[in-house]
Image (cartoon, rainbow, N blue to C red; front, side):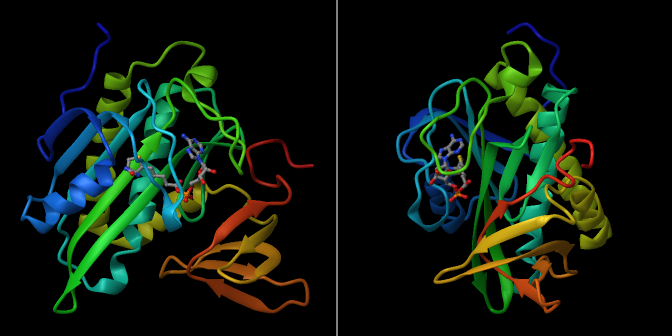
Amino acid sequence: MGGESPPFPDFFQLVTLDETGSTNDDATAAARGGAPEGTLIWARRQTKGHGRRGRSWVSPGGNLHLSIVLRPDVAPMRAGEIAFVAALAATDACAGLAPAADVRCKWPNDILVAGRKVGGLLIESSIAENRVEWLVVGIGLNLAIHPDNVEFPATHLALHAGRAVAVEEGLALLAEAFAARYRLWRDHGFAPVRMAWLDRAAGLGGLIRVRLENSELTGTFDGIAADGTLALTLPDGTPRRVTAGDVFLLDSVSSGASPG
Ligand code: BT5
């Protein structure tokens, strides 16, 4: 709405939809059909937006929902690094929209503002002949509205920006940030991405609970390893690595609040 937007990065071929089931479903179908790197599917509304493990993602008009096709041609073990690239891009966009807000990444795929979930990431991939054939990076950001009846407390950006945030503005900022962070990763590898992510990590050094498929762990969040796995120390001093799970922050040591 009239605001100055940066030019949309050349990296992307933008597909705009008024409504769809899920941009991730559309983008994975497009990737299977040979869509090139940089294909970006943006929908104003999703009727079947989803998160991990079949969980649903509330996707009303006014919020941002998009999925990007990537073809980085790397070994499969590097595919997980893209979640950190995407998290950084999403936090960049949030920080740009709400400069005074405390914007954090929560492992593995949450974006937090003021300790509440403002966005989420869903990465899907295909491996062929021991290379990554394609990746789809789905990003949902609550700009205008958030659901209340969710497991992790949610929020939306306009509340923290102190003004309405047009979805076109969010799209432009996110696209610009994504292109820049992806370039950083392509040119310099995971190390600078990991450092930047740790700089924005929620709960670092604090107590966390990690919900695994069939069990739970509680321990101190030490950071992420060079391969992107979560590193924590159990109360008895045992170090542990976790590749997949849900993290709950049990205190707020580095959530941006002044340390207690
Ligand atoms: C995520 O999953 O956080 C990943 C969400 C990815 C959504 C994007 S939108 C564009 C693309 N197309 C898709 O279909 N998906 C991607 P997960 O960590 O599994 O969290 C899901 C949980 O978050 C749900 O079970 C709810 O509790 C909660 N939730 C649902 N909608 C929410 C919202 N709008 N804001 C905050 N929390 C929400």
